[in-house]
Image 1 (tube, helix red, strand yellow):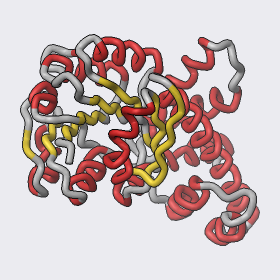
Image 2 (image 1 turned 180 degrees about the horizontal axis):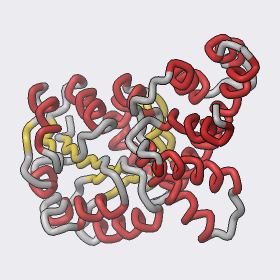
Image 3 (image 1 turned 30 degrees about the horizontal axis):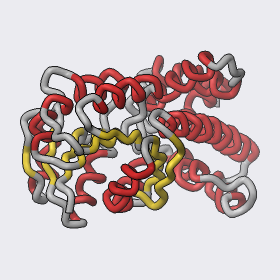
Image 4 (image 1 turned 180 degrees about the vertical axis):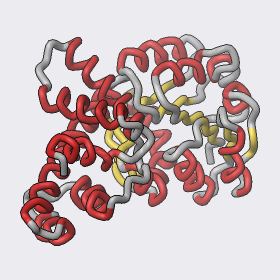
Length: 291
């Protein structure tokens, strides 16, 4: 089995790493906040002091951190992966970042004979724990085939979508779909509530029909129960929507629904709700109608 390096042990990364350990992979792990390493170390992962040390001891190095700058630092920075990874190794970045930054990083790694896949994920913390994430992959098909057994531990569907940066592009498409559908769920729940219909009953009546969605089945009940604990935080959603807005502007596309939901999330952030779950979007709409 390939030796795995894992960098980034947040809400998503930690359960993904645990699933790889349960599957029997030897893992060397690193996280900027050392305390988050404890869970995976207790389950058998080896602790590393830097991304470079992870790379030195691994055949496949996986990263899932916050933003483009974080990925650049982890891979290309002073103690980055590029300085210690072996020729023939693979870097799989599972963060959600800029497609153009991904393409640049892939070029830099290729100069050292290191392959790269951009493989962002969708499915939230629920999918990360269950190993049922949707993984969209950009890069060489033969590199993906080599890494497929590893990715299949974490994902229910693994789709090759094109060359470097295309995984990130498809993830931005995913985030438009996710966020705008989330807004629709909020509006439907408010209509039900204002009309005297039990929101939970409305969800049960509609989730298996044409209106069904992951957001309706998973976030809808949380909205109804006033459970705003983060599966995926608004601050992180806003980072993704910023990337999506930048990309549509680069391509001179119109995306009015994306722009609107971005503004509604901005209202949540202004009210100090940035670290709450994305279902908190409903609060922004409630404030608009004083409900």
